[in-house]
Image (cartoon, rainbow, N blue to C red; front, side, top):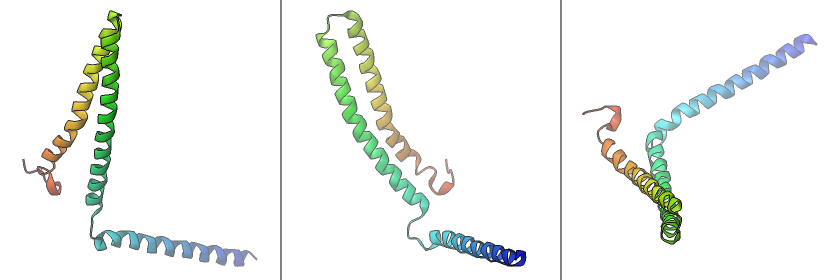
Length: 119
């Protein structure tokens, strides 16, 4: 009985080893057969995500800035006016930083193309 269990365990181990080996071969061959590398695909995905973030941040920034401007114009409390002004400054600075990230990446990408810095 123990001998039969031992053979069954060995067959099971051999089966899963073959599955792991075949999976490793498939995973390692796939990038060479693909028309697009993983880094090109990652770059495309990141550009799409960045585009969505910029679009959403612009809408949110305009909405919150409008609320801050209304508070600033309508409020009679000087503290509320000062807070609204500081919020406007923060919104503008954050929006400029988010939108300038794309320009920085577009400028730096040709410098480090192919993993070799040529600067």
